[in-house]
Amino acid sequence: MAQNETLFPAIGSLAVKADETTDVPKGNTDDAEDQVVQEVNSLCMNCHEQGVTRLMLTSIPYFREVIVMSFRCEHCGATNNEIQSAGTIQEEGTAYTARILARSDLDRQIVRSPSCEVLIPELELTLPPTSRGQLTTVEGLIRNMYADLNMDQPLRRIQDPEGAVTIEGLLGKLKAILGDEDQEEDAEDEVKLGELNTKRASDKDAPLPAFTIKLDDPAGNSWIEFIDSMADPKWNMRKYRRTFEHNVTLGLVSADENVVAINEKDEITNDAITDDEVFVFHGHCSSCGHPLDTKMKKVTIPYFKDILIMSTNCDRCGYRDNEVKSGSAISEKGKKIILKVEDREDLSRDILKSETAGLSIPEIDLVLQHGTLGGRFTTLEGILNQVYEELSDKVFAQGDASEPTDRAGFETFLKKLKEASISSWPTPQRPIIVDDPLANSYMQNLYAPDPDPNMTIETYDRTWEQNEQLGLNDIKVEGYESDAKKEASDTTTVDVKES
Image 1 (tube, rainbow, N blue to C red):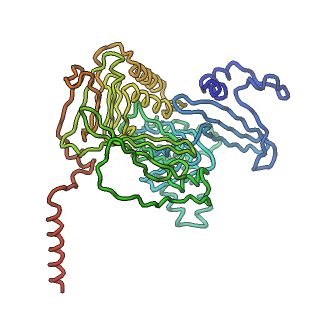
Image 2 (cartoon, rainbow, N blue to C red):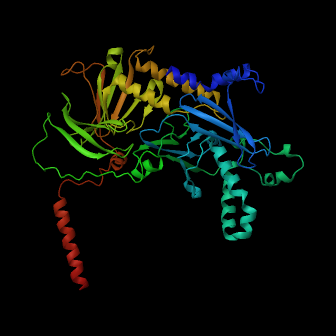
């Protein structure tokens, strides 16, 4: 960790160092190592003369280490800027969705890795993966789209008039999002270019057409900023396992590599699963695509129910994954567990959070939506640490377009979350709420079998919307044989009438 901090200092400390450091004269290499950026002579691909590439190794708070690169050729004026992740490819791919409903949403920060695909469904617009990354905002991304599409319009109007008309309609929609006035198109014809309106799109009064922006990155190194917390109703993050084609594209496996599928047929048995048995399932690693085994074991939790613990470990790339699932039938009612934490001993309680459960701490405005983090069997302290690590590793709340109040607010939120994980809240009796519509979650009762004075368990009837989301409205476990026979007889009757 100390070595990473030396190689990738925080971007704030680099800014302070840049203000205090004077430029190093050319030819003087004594103080070159103390400079904020490193300069390397590079060949300009435009005029084939020597240009200069500047490299800055830094770490962005709440995100990860990055390399910011800037190229400029003094001979022809060609420039190029990009950002690359200095970290590793993540274990899973990520898909982010943000609803842009107000002009303030145009200031959301975006980190786009070279493997990231950008989609705007309302415009039927898809940006494929590129050869370089971007550090920008939603507005910056839209402006880049507009500039790229508008670049060849004069030639397109001659060679492909129909395509030019289609592109022109798309340019009009992008201009409406940016809120640019029509006369700004002819700004390059004006003598005084300084008169061009440089007002940010988020500060304009023009109405904003609502749209959705999606980032799909198999490498898991892209990000779009949320507002205040992960409970932002206009923001969503989803993780998924990469396919073999994704791994080939990212260079994790070779396309010609012979990955042999294991098709062994295990002997089918009707014997009951015992607590001493460990089952092994053959499959492929979602990270590198090589064969691996997933182990499953049944565990009985006292005063609760049976659960299934599954563990996956890839010997080839080191990928690990653990998950907990219920081994019992679906409960008729949902369950809400409310624990009033008094001291650190309460944080050592075992907790089983199923894949359908949500967790919230009202005092620090922490809300985990149902399904976040998947199924986990750990302690309260452990699950709070997992939430903190996930946010501190993924969240990107810094940049030119981010408001200082937003940064301060999120830093305060992370501080409160860290204090919660070590039970140092100043106020006693702070509640932790676990809400599970399927009642498959559990929190250890320190007074079992007697009631716990600090724990309240409430059962409730699920709403129609919850059953619909869980897929329970279409499930029928009784009388389906008669329905199948009736449907078969109705089909036979129709066939007879037609004949």
